[in-house]
Image (cartoon, rainbow, N blue to C red):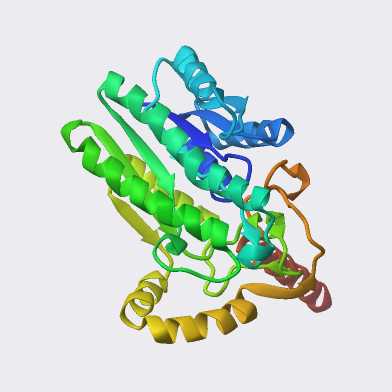
Length: 315
């Protein structure tokens, strides 16, 4: 059966990868994000990838009434919503006292209260329909902490608690599922797009996974709902260290964050994309990992050129 899937945060990173993943499965898509021009690009990508139909709705999840309007568009267009994937998030780097209060609050408003808003409208619809799956995107930083990311950490810890509470409340709603996908470091543009008051551009600490891998985990939740899926090879190790050896963890996390979580590239104080989208910076990948498909094409092309040259010399 062709499903109707809503993706909020569809223009970049995990959300864009998830939109492509569901498109490849032939689902109907309703894509939402803040930047209309980028949404149109993603619509074309998903149509080319095999989506049954794609509609786009420019949406800021922090704006009053925006999520109700998005829900109405999806239901009017396709009759129902089967899966809602929420990935929209922003980030800010800096010591807590040096991040402007309005920036910190907007990070929490987007990442936590925006998620709560999505959950509210999605679960109301699913309860009326008798079925549906809500997939929220958490983070390993919902289980551990790191310096210079207080707004994001606060939001992801809150989201972890919200997801757990919603799962408990949904136990008496057969057919309604709440899932949480929890990635570690992912190769997305969110680090370059972040507000920054620490003076150095952020980056995902090693090891880094791909947004496509997280998107496959999201699609797996849509097929076979699970309470939580962790995506990242060292997520469990970090969680054990944080819980079992808190004093050691706290000694190490600051130096490791400065070494692995921040680049050497300077950046002046900036609000990044916290309040306003930056379409030029939106993409699936952030450039932190090599594009293996491009490497394969390059190597393949070079091999063909060498083979051709050898054949010419031998002929």
